[in-house]
Image (cartoon, rainbow, N blue to C red; front, side):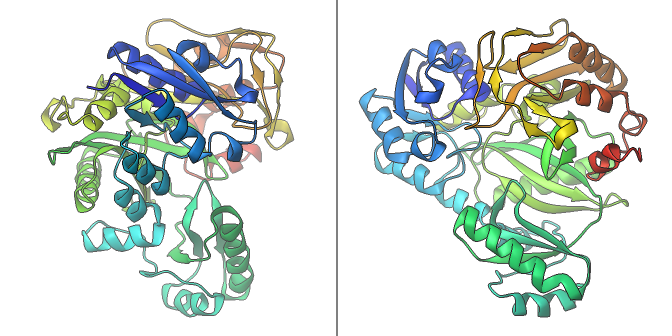
Length: 449
């Protein structure tokens, strides 16, 4: 096992990883920008190293500084968390070249699944159902239009290197295709430096359900069940839960099997997520694979009684998984709400500032993952998340009731938050009925549900 791990991240996920390392008896190194000089993860880690100024490109995305910090502190491995460099194959390769273990899949696997067009082709070859669309990358609007005529409208135009909703547009008919393709391609170039696109038939207001998998270097791959992430805004998740209220046992078994087959097709190791879209008939299609830990991983941990971060570390150290598929027996229901410093009434504008006072909820079956504290500053440089509230109940009804109580109990003074908005979702009849799809938030804002 490792003696020291560097965490190439910040915020609540850095704190989460430090806690897992402590439980495993592993020393930790925090890295931070000058804007995070007083961040919680810098105090909790055994050592901390400043890696640059506030802008992410100069600090948390500065590969040379992070590698240098790892070598300077004699860290044997780096955990990238989520976001930043977590799915950067160049970073993973440089870690390997410098004799540092990257806690995640190999750079080759990251490359193969990070390119969405290539990932689609890989899944087709593996027999995993995909949304009807193109098999190979498209580089011009004219070629795309020809393919769109074969697929039929509405068409989803996506960046091959995309993520986070960037480089994505919907074409409703032939007349707007060229314009939508050009906009999406420009976004892709600006965000990823890549102009390759692909097309999918647009499934209107689908359910977004993902399956958590974890694999080791001995060829063992285990599915830990699904999470429903349909409650989202602009492709950014807001509420996640496990199990999905939309998925029955038959579909669940088929999705888990497809996720394992997808992971086997690329020789996957570490924790990863296979994301699916489901239409109104519960037919599911592969969307993408996230080759990292997810923000919403705690809901899976709550229902399966596992620690995914510890499992990632053990696998990276060459250990086999500590459980088999037969050991996974999900119990109860878990829900996660992301509490952000933002103003829902003003288009969810970020609300940077200093948290002058904060009270976190607690109680049986309530977990809060956060790096915030009284006096903590929400800067404009990074994500505005304050905390993740995760609750576990014997069933979905109990979990929703616990979440309402937790949201009521949480107090944040000094910045605007989405606490009331999240509470309103928990009170909503459509959400309570388990029928919310990816169009729910838009309808909710218009008062249509």
